[in-house]
Image 1 (spheres, rainbow, N blue to C red):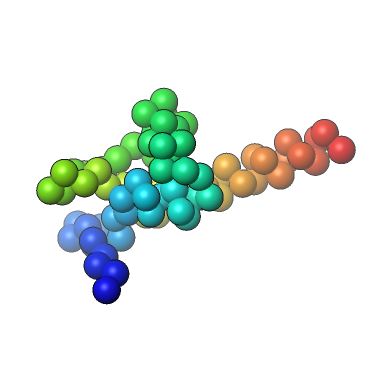
Image 2 (image 1 turned 90 degrees about the vertical axis):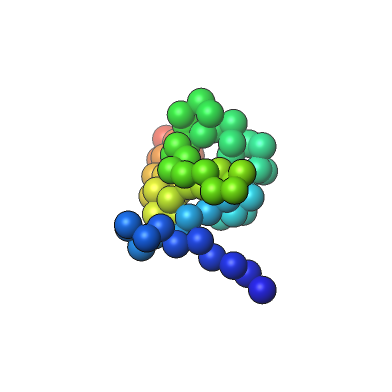
Length: 77
């Protein structure tokens, strides 16, 4: 079973730090460190002790992060 948390207002899936980290290819601690330093999306909710992020914001952040990395790699070549 893989429960899913959906925000009733937006219809967006909400992810835990573990899910955000898995999606972005980082460790959980790295992702939460980025979020704490405002280098990743800020959490949108807390539910029963779980800190949650909007999956759409994480997807957008990750896409922009990947495109920045590709631009930087191209500039170094």
